[in-house]
Length: 251
Ligand SMILES: Nc1ncnc2c1ncn2[C@@H]1O[C@H](COP(=O)(O)OP(=O)(O)OP(=O)(O)O)[C@@H](O)[C@H]1O
Ligand SMILES: [Mg+2]
Image (cartoon, rainbow, N blue to C red; front, side, top):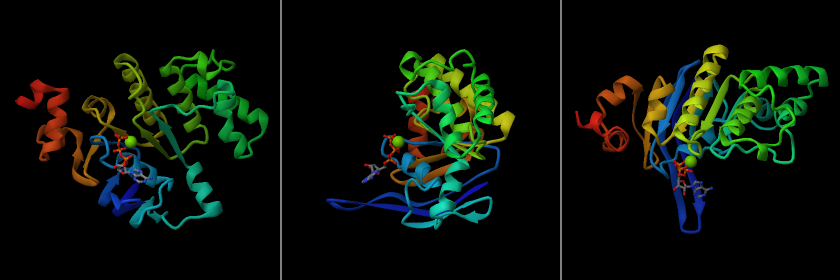
């Protein structure tokens, strides 16, 4: 379980301090798929990057399975990061390495033996439906296939949490559905807790059980997907619904 309490993040800019997260609190249940939706600049990436301390919060607390992580450094920070996988809109694969080497990378860094790595990589590529692509390079793959490689790599070290920052924003609508279904299947098989950021209602509807609406660095509403979308309180939630599902929002 991930508990975020009164999280604030201020960036120092040339024009003075900028508050990207303002008193953000939310709870992500273990094993759930929790969506965070909001417009560009809402603070979504800053929030998700705080969960593995790619961003250090200015104040507030983040607890994972009851333990505060915000002061972790050194070896403990490395262990935390290893227990949290992450995927991005832009896939972020190593372009000079094969699919096999990309997925093997975190395992090699963790000191796993070669035979164990090979069998784990085969298992992962089977899981994401790319068992015939071990020797391909990222440039030889479609966007959807590249995101599958990124998912295999993110899941390699059996993380308890998978952070997804707009994982389907670079993909067409059919491929988006396939990638979301894969994430859903991985969640079902491994019980990995997924935090997924998006600006699309359809993405939340397809796989999330809970949703948090973020706008202007603050949480506007949160709850089960069914509740929040059936009875949206915030203007921004209604706007997003209207943009994506005009008939539904007008009801
Ligand atoms: N390193 C930084 N220094 C200064 N300001 C930053 C920094 N990172 C983010 N910000 C600002 O914080 C705000 C939130 O950024 P963030 O990337 O979290 O938004 P987002 O919701 O992910 O947007 P998008 O949907 O466009 O990805 C933006 O106004 C951004 O300019
Ligand atoms: Mg972002």
